[in-house]
Length: 409
Image 1: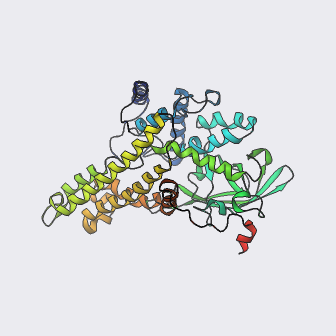
Image 2 (image 1 turned 90 degrees about the horizontal axis):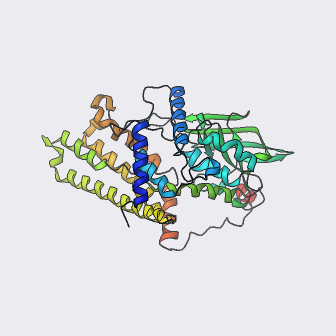
Image 3 (image 1 turned 90 degrees about the vertical axis):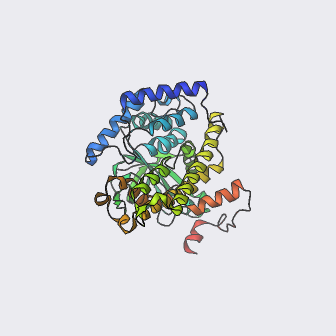
């Protein structure tokens, strides 16, 4: 692994850093979030304004072709931008799905007139996209989708339900995976569409999370009409389209575990008293902090391997699944230990304990979701076992069975 930038990468990093310093707001604390103090409408407007600035400067979609409004840059330049932007207060989880998954799928599979219609407005933040894959009975097993699309002339009529759709409550469009043929095996009967999230029959219900946020949603479709022109890829070719969408996540190898968690544990352990002395003096506490440091460094080294591959023009391999598997559990364990440091009071709202506890409390409340979103722990273990370690795959008896039989089996 090479931890150093090439001269070209170093020059691009300096360019990005200068632009961010001139146009952005540097973080002053780890839990600082974009739009604090603004209502939802004002926060969304401010986020769109930031996205428009990025697009105008050529940073909104660095790897996209120039003809599509991008910079025509490298994957490593995209990673460098993400690393530098992480130090600034920027909109989180508003445009990531648009730029990272939805619009690249449109760019790959849509007809030319749809590309002309959607790519530039989406890139500039004028329209926001979501991804409608998961269902109550089809989460990690995406092939089990039951949302039905039936052809009626030049339209498709959609009925069904999606769940855990990030940002659906403020999105304008989405990429929607449906079942169009129930007599084919489950992966072969799927078709992907663009759906207007404001169309008649689309109902979005935010899900209130224990962290107090409502970033996920249930989405219900009742006789929603979608023009066949909005189909992405061939009829019953949705599985291949969906896989191409998920492949876009490969650029997300840059840090999914905060790099300063052990430092926060040290600071909190110095403030808390155990047996009438600072908790940091207790060997058990020091050992837990050391474990947190090792987990963090382990993830950073695997990420560095992925970045090295990108820097050499290669794609990160399936071993990158390790980072998400380790990081999600580490975040949960580290945040839980931080609250243990405070004893029973650790579960009290941070307002009563002081602002120093806000970061870890929010991390603790949000960490369980990280072990589900983007692939559960169990699915990632299968990926690592089969594609990294070369172990025999699980026996799958439903591959050639018509979905109708599985539905009624």
